[in-house]
Structures are given as C-alpha cells and as structure tokens.
Image 1: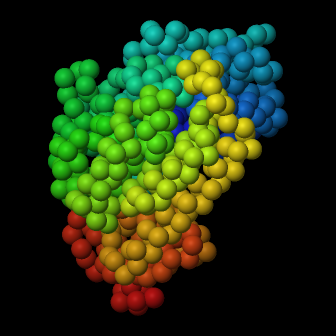
Image 2 (image 1 turned 180 degrees about the vertical axis):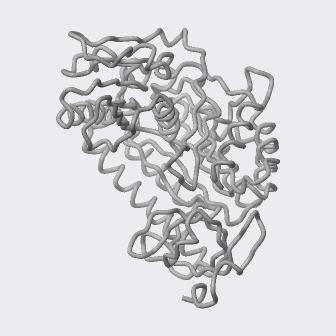
Image 3 (image 1 turned 60 degrees about the horizontal axis):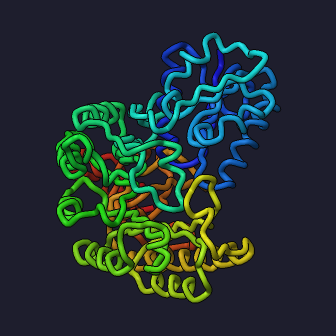
Length: 449
C-alpha cells in the first residue's frame, strides 16, 4: 500500500510527521509525494491561527481530489481542538487527538473506509504521554529536528497550544541523547532541538535544559546543535553562558517577544517586561557580538492602539536583532483574549503587520551586510538552485556557494563576500571534517572559482 503525508505548522509537527512516516515504512508502506495517488493520507494540522485551520480543510479536500478512495487520517492540534469540524468534511475517515496521534494503526485497523468517520480524541487534561519524535530516515538531509519537550504551562492569553497539546512534559535526558546519537550515525551533522516551550525542559522531572545541553555537547560526531526557540524568562545566565562557550551550540537565538510594550505584555499574560527583554538582547550581544537573534511579534492584539503600535515599532527598531517573525493576531476559540475589549479592525492589523515585516526585512538586510567580509562555518544543504548550493552559518545567515557534488552535507569555512537581497554569496576557504579544517578534498581550481 501507498501512504502520503502533509504537515502544517511548526517544526515540532514536522518531527512528529517524520516519526509517523517511519511507522508506515516499517510496516511495508511505500511513502509517495502528496500530489501522487495514494491509499492512505495522513494530514498533521496546526491551530495557531484561523488561517492554519482553513488551510487544513483545504488540504483535506485537495487530497480527496487526487485520491477519492484514500483512507484519510487527520491529526495534530486542529484535530484536538475541532474534531467534529474535521469529521464533517466528506471523505475524512479518522480524527486523532494529541494522545492518539502516534497510534494510527491501532485505530485505523485495515484502513478500509467506513460509512462514517471515527473520532478518537481524549480530553486534553488527560494527555500526559510524550510521543518521541525526530525527523530523519532514508531521506538523507543535513539537519534533523529532535523533539525534546511538548505542551506548555504558561497559558498566554492568545494561545491555543495548552488546549491542543496539554501541559508541559519532557523526554528524559538519556533517551534524548540516545536519539541524538542515532541521528549522528545516520549522517546528520546538525540537530535542532524542538518543542513547545523547551526552556521549561525537565522541570517537572528533576532535570534541566542546561543538563541536557551539557550531555548533548559531549556526543562524538555531533558537530552542531541549534536551539529552535526559547522564552526570554527561561534563558537564564547559566544557560546563556554555556550556550556561548560551547563549540557545538550555534550562536543563533530565537526569542519570542510578542510585544515591545508592557501594557500589552501584561494583557497577553507574558512573564517578563520589555526592559527584561531589552537587557537580555544586549547581554547576548555582549557575550557573542555576531550572534543572530530572531524575534517573534504579534500585531493587532486587542487594545493595541496606534500609540502602542508605534512604540512597539520603535522598541524593535532600536534593538540589535537580526530578523522578525511577524504574526497577525487571530481570534482563537476558548482563549482569554477572544473576549478582550479593543478589537482591532482586520485592515489595520494587516497594514501594521506589513509595516512590521518591512522593519524585519531591514533588520535582516542590516545584519547580513554587517557580516560581509567575515568568516563562518556553513553546513551545505543538498538543494541545487541556479547551479549553487545553499546552507546556513552558525549564526543563521543563508549563504550560497558554487555547486560541487562533494560539498553536499558537509561543513565548510567560507568568507561572506556580498548580499543580493535574499542570500549572501560566499567563497569557500576550506572544508571541515570532524571539526578539523582541510583543503584536501578539493582542487585549488574548485576552491578558487
């Protein structure tokens, strides 16, 4: 039988989908591209915004147009929050919640379409299993996403994640290290640690995020560790000091802000002030001047007046950050903020979001240009575009170098020469094998071009 998969949302979802794919491969299924005809279709959904839910419904219908007789399984956050809505879509056969999503074979049986869809969704307050997951397998890629934590206890006013994934829970250190070792053996040189709130890792179980980093740092053959995102109030001095002192952990920080004004941070139920956030950013830059720093921001939250928006713009404009992820506020059912006064008209939300994205582009351009002439280590990815290969520096600058087969999935030292508005052009200075620089793999002509 053939199976296909489609993933919406965060990198955590992608890691979980990859683990589901391995389940199907282990049982003899052929994994085919989503646009191909299939016997089974698994759709992993997101529910962070209304748009994500709309996309999920569109994907279900698109799958059924391609494979009208396919057995369709919908799982993920939207499945947990809106199972009846999903089940009402013609052709859906099985809806699995947060506690059930890794047990597709148990609930689907022989994958024969029935007269009515089957809904298997537990109350989120009863969800406490972890569901180990990582991306990786037969499709050799350069970077693997490793799930270390799930759920969240913070209950921010705008967020559905606690409703969709439950409370914070973590995978214990030994299991995480064993999975990382397995990924290294599969050929991955960089592991990206993912979760909903990874700074909260292990707090309920007597271990910590710092202890995990210290153990991962010791793994032979693991050349790079990248941390997907961490809350500002959980990036402690001890974690930061180890982070910047490690030779393996990338000097790339992604830190959610959501608003640069204390009035909205309080309404959002965030656990820090704008002053704390600002001090943290400058502390990172003091310890690692070339660090790449990404920031999440929500635009159009209830009560965001023109004055507050302009203050938010000014706050972010003055910070030495590298890029922005801008989210337009979306009303989510059963979240506290849906009933807050001061609702912002959609046209204003989108206009303000566009202005903030323009600021983000300016920040990214300025950061890239500040790195011209500097030397970095780049993990080269396998995708060829315009006879060029691309990859990321340790501080998250996308660069491109001329295509050469032996470069794929290798770490090279480069000098950044120019920025074309999208990506930096770089010159290869040397290759890096197990952390040791070498020029022996390439001819002088290849390195010079």
